[in-house]
Image (cartoon, rainbow, N blue to C red; front, side, top):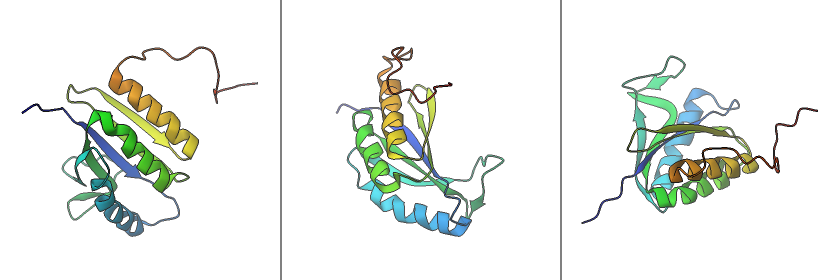
Length: 143
């Protein structure tokens, strides 16, 4: 039986309009939906074993955070789902490959989700080590 190494994706919600308990309820509602996304092998709340200084934990889990094991070929499906669900809300994503490489991404609009998805795919393919220098679509204009 051939095995494919999955990517660990940590999803952190941060909505300033929600208090901690509402944020946790949002994550708990999101969890079964993430489990249904194509390519998601497993998803769960993140245990608070190593709580970052700025994170809050309740009942042994980090508030507003969940983790999923995703087949690399299906990362686009997860990003598409998250974009549809949180298109204009802030979200942080961290991807970790089996070889230990990591990338952290943030998005708060559909356009940023598309950009983050492309960055994630490039990271996973390990083919794009330099930025495109043509400047198309650049949002870093300083005029």
